[in-house]
Length: 276
Length: 161
Image (tube, rainbow over all chains, first blue to last red):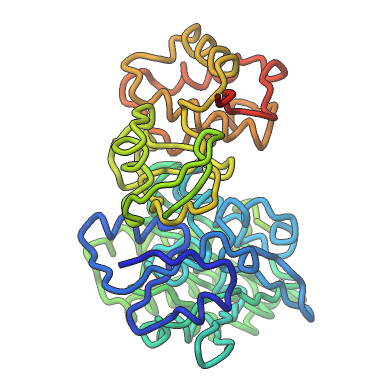
């Protein structure tokens, strides 16, 4: 194994072969290596590639570089003002030292079911921009999550995100401590109301399913319905059912299901301070 | 050959590039102020400054620091270190001392971004530093009692001869 320190995207792409592994902050990978993960090919270090550390506007979208650390994202004014769920979630990752090192690209490609940054990205209908020997492509994050094992040789270069307009955006994380705590349950929602009716609704739990995903069935069922306490309660029931249909009943379900249902209702009824 | 700046001095080494920066610092450079703790990024005892940001050196591979700047507790100028040490001692913030060098590095990492932090900001800056004997209250107090204006942050490292 050899570490190749790459200074730009082109250099990464030209060094990719079937055994390559990308390394950015290393906050997941180095721990796995210590646990015995054997890396047979080269490690392509992307941690100091400036092109991957930019936030830019492009035709109504915000491009968030995959090499930005969680600290960078938490503090970035463009992200804070336009896609605040992402900035808030990045501030909830690990500890200061981990936020200073771990990157959003790493969080997504590692794709843990409790990854802090994925639920906000799914709420914003994010696209993943990938570069490989075959060129550049753009994939919806939902598809990336499902097919990511076939995209191991693709380098995530950026996330393309459209800010939401007229939504109230919510994020809540349940963990054992305030710091260095893996999410036990996270819930991100975005709700748009129009004349007392639900015009649009997005729900994404974290740490409840084997892979992060939105609850599209519950969302669709209640778009267009009247916004009232009864309907939100019914919606929470349907959302719990959807989680159960996807993930089955787990050892943690007796705890997680009622907590999830309660947080969902509180978020949608405006009982928490909204992120935006 | 891997080259980088360590405490203001240019280093060139032929060490294996896949060892952790922590192992390099302790075993090769013999800088034992950076402590070995959990080695999985949970205790923060190995905190150093990489390009002026506090990070866990157990999670960085040596090959990744090519051309980067590293500062360990040994590199900090005496007058900065003395002020922080004095303030921590006066607050009773050092018992066994194992977490102390890393606490100092985390506090310095914070001061580089924010030269007048409040208690909450200090708490957050050391949220990745585990202390199992002194208690965080005294450490936060020690950091808060610092006379921030007196700490000259423009050049952290001692003069290299």
